[in-house]
Length: 223
Image 1 (tube, rainbow, N blue to C red):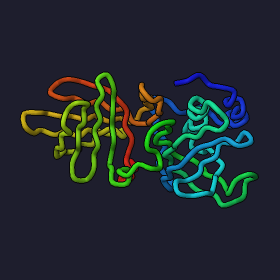
Image 2: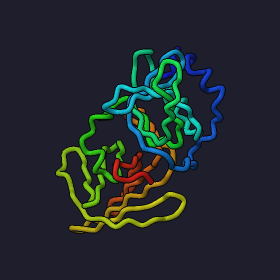
Image 3: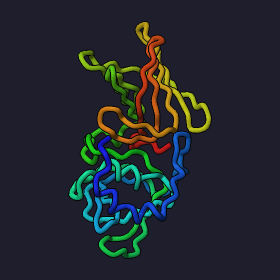
Image 4: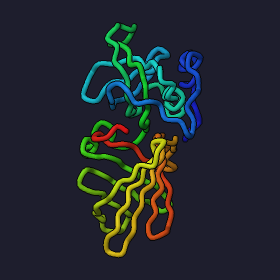
């Protein structure tokens, strides 16, 4: 990630009222409406503009998700925007300079790069996981999972899901002599290439080889 620029100081008043309770093994309770949109800062306030809308809502981090801190480390100019995927409750009461307030309960991811609001596959996805060195990605929907690696054909596979407790689960598939396992856990994870922050960690096991990365739920699954 880039170093926090002067923009951080514009958010300091917000930090003062926010207790830093988020951590590697904590997952806020999911409630409210899931919303994707663009984050920006105006007059020291962090605002979210939902995708395909013009309304802007002041963020009130009632769930102590850490969004304010994560945003400060990713935003590096006052004109910059981020993409955020969150859950919360919209409050129509007017807040100066906004169209209301978003009482935040859960943070799925926040990123500076990527498709964001323009991701055509998001609504159909159950999960997306990816890692680097070497690069890999797994896209999961109701019909199956697709493993992609640079220079190789995409591999589509059926899968079985097993719930492991504490929000952890794994997806397994065996086909054509390949045993593939994707282990997912609720844990803050930073993409080493883009700096995007996601709140699921992932571990891909392919015939005994282990590769680590991050993951997030797609639009067809919230938890």
